[in-house]
Image 1 (cartoon, rainbow, N blue to C red):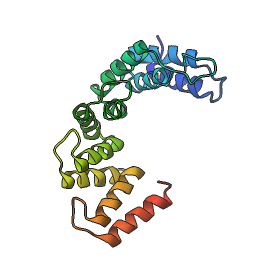
Image 2: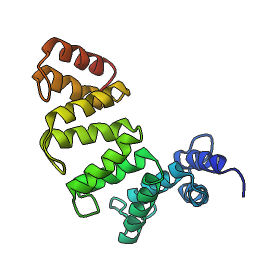
Image 3: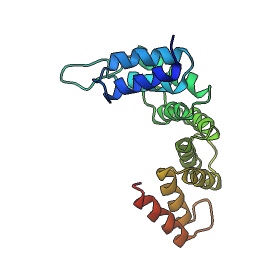
Length: 193
């Protein structure tokens, strides 16, 4: 039994090899245990390991997840996302936007980014901002894209600040304010964006 949060944290130590010898199978077992008890960030971590293909080494080649692994990845991300884990919404949304191991669907990606953004995940807001700016999966609405980029930036997302500063300086979705945009971009640059 044990504490679900402790299982998730211990799994992270094994997955990273921090303070213990790196042991991905042990990390997976602990993440499985925590995920089964609805620790949604453990479900996300489990999905990320499966997606990496790390458990499927191929001599001389990059590891590759199996189709069964990828089906499980989608299920894990969906479950965590629809239980309120914003980063899982982002990860699954990005898979759909990029067509990475799933059939590309801009609309599904946008819905997942929206769910993540509404749940407070800033990178989901930034992803959705780009979609509104370009009209992919959602009607083109540069003003909405600008607001989402600003929201991501205000939440501390450096990529959000980069997009917000660029849009502000160029007048994309808002009145052009080159000096204000330049200040935002400078802060993002100095922060390591």
